[in-house]
Length: 291
Figure (cartoon, one colour):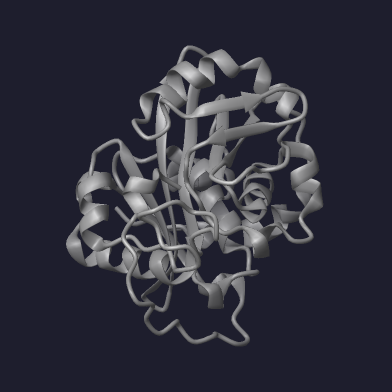
C-alpha cells in the first residue's frame, strides 16, 4: 500500500514463479530486518515478489497510471522510500527463495505501542498456505501492544490480521480511537497523513488514491465488506484490532504454534516476538537460539 506516486512505475511482466505442489506450512521460514539494513540484493527480491504478485491497476485509474497493467515497484524505489531505521520488513522464505513480505512501522502513542502494516504480498504460487497470517503473527505475536493495524484493499489481508491476532476488527471500536489513530499513527506517515478517513459504526475507509483492481479479491468476500464498508475506487480499508478486545478466531492457533519454530532468532533491536517471548512460552520448542 502506498500513494500513486510510489507505485506509478509499470513494466512488462516477467515470468511468474512455478507452483510448489505438496508443500506444508512448516517448509517456510520467517525473518525480519530493519529498513536501515536493507541492501540492494534484498530490494531486488522484494521488487520481484511485489511486481509479480501484488495486482493490477484499476480500469478507472487516472493517468499517468496504466489501467489493467501490473503494479510494479523497482528496487530503487524500495531503497529510496523504505531504507529507513523506523521501517521494518518481515519476510518469508522457502528454500532460500523469498516468497512473501510485509512492510510495517511501530509507533509509540499516548495509549501504547501500535504496529501498522502498509504492504503485504505473497507470491501467487504460495498463497492459501497461511503465509500471510504467519508473517503478521511474526510481527505482532504475543506482544502487549495497544493495537495492530493494516491498510489494505484486500479482504484476505484483513482476514490474515484477524487470524494472526485472534481478534475481530470492528469499525465501531476503531472509531472510539479515531483521534489517536489519526494524529499519532496516520499523521506520522507522510503518504497517509492527508488521506481522508471515513470511520463510524459501519465503515472504516481511507482515501489513499491507490487505484488497485479489486474485481477478483472482492468477489465472494461479503463478510469483510459488510463489516468494514463498501470500498470506493482509489480507497483502502484501515483495519485495527485492539489488545483489550475479546480473543476469538482461535482456529489458527495450532497452525501458528506449529510454525513458531521457523521464526528466526537473534535479530537485535526487534520486537520480543523474535526472541525471548516465544522461548519463554514454549521452551521445549527452542532448546537453542541463534546468538
